Picture 1 (tube, rainbow, N blue to C red):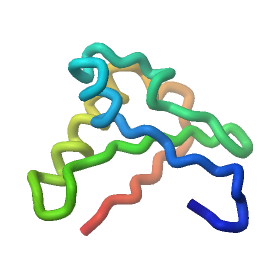
Picture 2 (picture 1 turned 30 degrees about the vertical axis):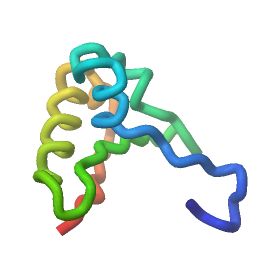
Picture 3 (picture 1 turned 90 degrees about the vertical axis):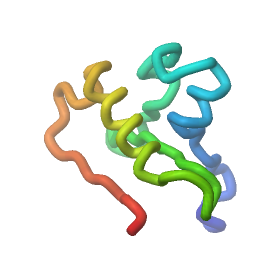
Picture 4 (picture 1 turned 60 degrees about the vertical axis):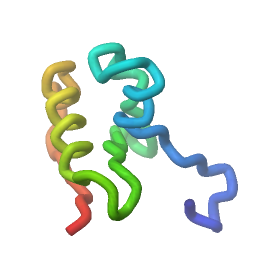
Length: 84
């Protein structure tokens, strides 16, 4: 979180919400996609704790979910911030 913006809140991740609801198939796009400044759409994929599991799983699961649910419709540019 940015300390200069104390109202900021960490965004729930696709994997966290999928685990809470049972599976990614139980999610709606509105559950994970948040719209911010100037209409910028943001999604956090999430992943396992460091040293446990495969971080790529969260990225693959999230991208597949976004594609299947039309998140890339009417979008001019997509940017991924990926570890590694």
